[in-house]
Length: 367
Image 1: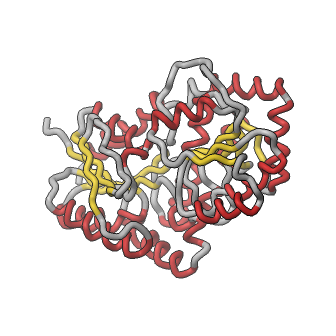
Image 2: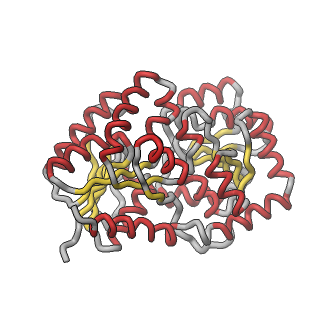
Image 3: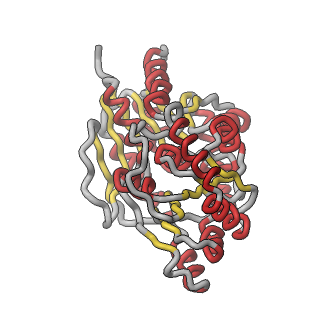
């Protein structure tokens, strides 16, 4: 039997994309020939050794419209000279070259929706940018018959708005059997993108009423605004940035924290319907968390009770929730124990079966 070759495309630096590392590694273990294509930055570290092939494209531009235009052109010509049986676009920002290459070569195509891209806060808050991405989404998603996304709520939206019947493959971590944290610092931790709409400005202001510091592990387009808020409120000794961390180092930092936070503003359906990877990362680290009372988090928390849910991002609401976890040791220990139980069900060892079944069915399907 001929080994099937699958190409995956992203616009990020591959070393930090835990979801794609899990997906590509799993499919390689299942016998597929896998290539993951991303971007290279001036700050990029050498690629970590994996059981699948990785390539990064160099671009002159690093952000905004010039970057997306350049990257998509470079990606198109890169893919043009690569053999594949299937090509998978990760989010809208790589979907165009994947579509045209799949049509040109007559190969299968898949859409992996990490997010509801046109409903990102940084998209819906800018009318011209929204119209551009919405047109692409409206045109392309019906042409990608096969696809998957990270939660039921997003799958329902894609079906309702575009007639796309996508599977759900949640972004859950690989199971680590460590039952207790070896060390723990009295800190609040946020991991992930530091972007507009992530609620970090509200979290920072909440730290004025909290006795422990905030660790931020990540970076993004909201760093300047966040630093301005910190400076204005004299919180420089209360908020600490660690930048982008490779997965192993990030897991270590998460496991050291006492409380974690998963804030999202409600602007745009993407945030409201999200089921972020950090939610599961906190569970696997055994760290009680404060997260939003949004549909996907509410559904999982009703089953496992691993988090304190909040209804809004007022700094007073956030600080009250943090301080309650600091003082209510019974609640804290119950949430921690629930995390250790929940991760036995919410893990990649169980979730990856859906991924393998998806690609087996895809390649068994008659053209």
